[in-house]
Amino acid sequence: MTDNDTNLSGEARLKAKRSAFFRYFALTLIAGFIAGMFSGVAAAMVEDGALPIGVLIALWGVSMVGFVWFCRDYFRRIDELDLLDNLWSSTIGLYTYLAVFGTWYLFSSVGLATEPDQIVVMLTTLAVTLAAYIARKIGWR
Amino acid sequence: MNNRLKVLRAERDWSQAELAGRLDVSRQAVNAIETGKHDPSLPLAFRIARLFDMPIEEIFDDGQ
Image (cartoon, rainbow over all chains, first blue to last red):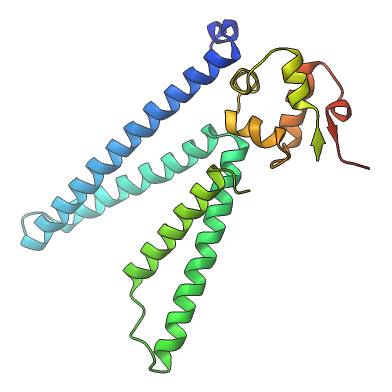
């Protein structure tokens, strides 16, 4: 916060902070989209033998560093209520993962179901995590 | 936990957004505290007390 910010009203400060946050969030989404596209193209090129595997591994490393940096920075920017919303939804997501994967694995081990499909389990986990986050955001605390 | 945040805010004719900006939290956080859905952390409770220039126990009441 600069010295000039202290002269602003609380509403103006909140508005400026929200605008800055959404700009930051939009930029990281764009960066994530570009990184996803590049890694997809690079993976296809590695499959075709047009790109050494080392380049893909380097791209993956850069993406992971960027992802960890974003996560750390995001949690430093949000307030304590949003942090709680994130922690609660992540916990619910983790328990969902354990329940869905554990149940599927149990039934597959006795022949009542197919092998657990990790993509389905992950998408279910993400969907429940997002639903829990939205539920808290709209006030179901 | 009960609190007098809404009353103190109204006395100063501040909106929730105004108070949120002064406390450096979101408007949703102010609303959640006012409606008793979220108990603020100790650092935030101190910031609130300093902003209103009052002791914490005059703003928050744990019913004891």
